[in-house]
Image (cartoon, rainbow, N blue to C red; front, side, top):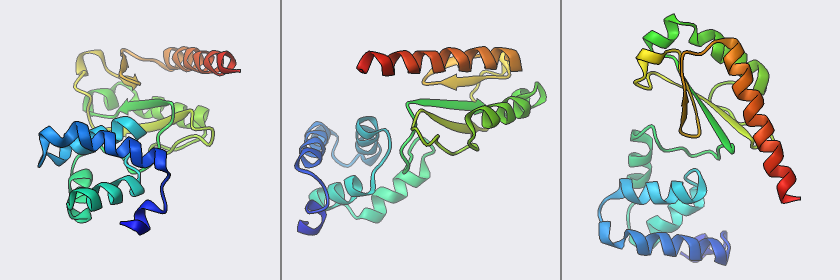
Length: 171
């Protein structure tokens, strides 16, 4: 445990201990525990999993087994705006590949990557369950449907403007 503790800050240990305190009622439910960690960090940092494994005496392989089984979990840090593109059958037929290509070109990343400035993460999924309004993208839990390249261009412009305004407000 000292090896793990030496690699993370006291603040991170305090944060993780608070997460473990919240989880104590759901002992044995590793999915909930991993969700709490991911909600806090935005992903599952390796040091956090090692700390939790050591503290709760849960084999690290068990935590990784659960985290790799469910698509909701990520081991890499995501951008401030997560852009999820549906490429299910209905969306695919209605032009999703063109939208994905456009987003990759505009963001200068491939699906599964995050921009260097940590502003955008681009993901592609098999289906979002919104076939009636296909093609669909989701940006931070906001759904956009019946998309065209022009609509995506406007959405991206709006999100970038919002991002720049929030950056200016911090300065």
